[in-house]
Image (cartoon, rainbow over all chains, first blue to last red; front, side, top):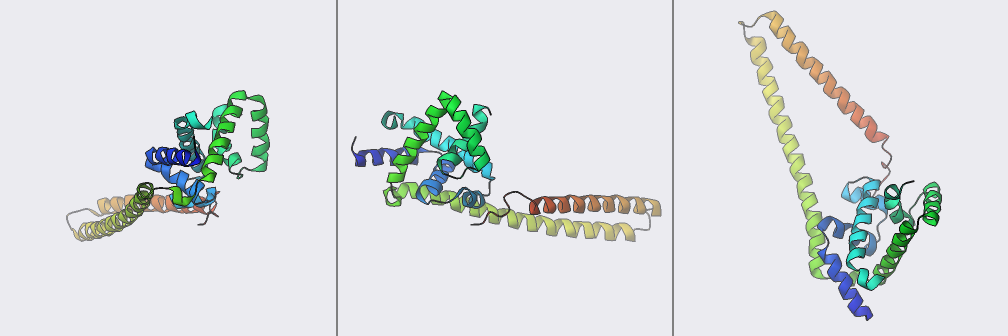
Length: 69
Length: 148
């Protein structure tokens, strides 16, 4: 699969995520905020940042398993 | 450490934000647990792929969803502030009227007035104590230093 196609597929899968997951993926991956910054921006504990990020990435990984394995 | 307990730390390890002692513990576990190791490797690949993408790669639709979430949170914050202020004003006014009528009423005996006043005073002391405790906990809260 070409890079553009892969990017398009990633975009599509990110856009399908629930709002909470999409939000934390954008803040971490695309805006590069630290866990502490995200924790304060979303008003959630640091542990919740890590677990929400885990479930968000897990969902994304599972949905993209055909191209990232 | 059980697999489920360490899942969130896979993220902090992946993003280079893990504490040194937790890192050691996690790496020990990853060396022993094949399932977690495979999952971690898949997360590494996912991160490598998303790192190649840029902000510009995200569509307007996706950004709209993101900003809607931000606005929704702001709206709710403002809503809660107004609701709390309104409730405090109404409750204070109600309490003022209640005590004014109670103390002015000659038909109510002194003992009943004293009982009601003591009960309310006790409730206020308890409330202040709880608020003070919450504020103290807030001051010593672990992530207090978190700043945007």
